[in-house]
Image (cartoon, rainbow, N blue to C red; front, side, top):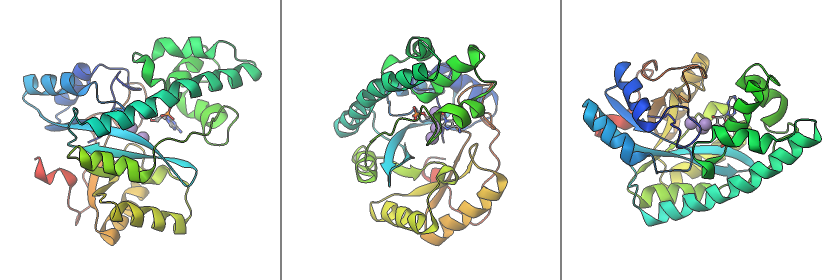
Length: 272
Ligand code: AMP
Ligand code: MN
Ligand code: MN
Ligand code: MN
């Protein structure tokens, strides 16, 4: 229910992601590129050829209480005007931010990072921190992704550029307008206080949000249990996903996501 292709910050094309998912035993597959819908037609055709059910998805960047959260939309209509207009707006901010990141890299002795990151971004309108990270690793500045985020790109680090993505209201309303269901991606990654988390989940629910990710490549097994409890407490459906980006990165491959804890209703029950 959550993975990426070259349309955002993954390294495989939508067709290659479909083939890998199918080869790994996936029966129901959603592609959820960041802030982009342009891979969905290819993904849907590839899934169809393979005889695998497909859910068109997206992962929208949101700013809530000065931090970035990601809201996955599942079952969205890729031709919806409101959703497309909102995502176009988000993407335009990425290029400006990438220039600013390159300036900051230059100030700390890493020149030409924009030119270096760009070849990693197969879709130039969707340049992300991941593309900068791959450039830094290739040049030997860091050994792996985690090190790049810990040293340079994570919140509060020297190259972190504060962003105003969309609001939670906007992201959820665009997903609903496009006929989709809204899902909080990897809640375990956010650094909110308990009071903020409660406000966030309550607001998401009030806006019509349907689900939270419980089992994801971004959670530890302890967090599976924590967010299972949250889903039960707020009456959310549960989602899961590898958050696959590359065969060489991340904790979980496509099709290797552990089962949901018991007692939860999966978001995909309508599609399965
Ligand atoms: P952006 O949308 O440009 O802010 O980039 C966010 C992307 O960076 C996420 O979708 C992940 O793919 C990646 N990312 C964020 N934090 C980390 C981290 N700590 N380790 C590895 N990858 C990360
Ligand atoms: Mn990503
Ligand atoms: Mn995410
Ligand atoms: Mn993701």
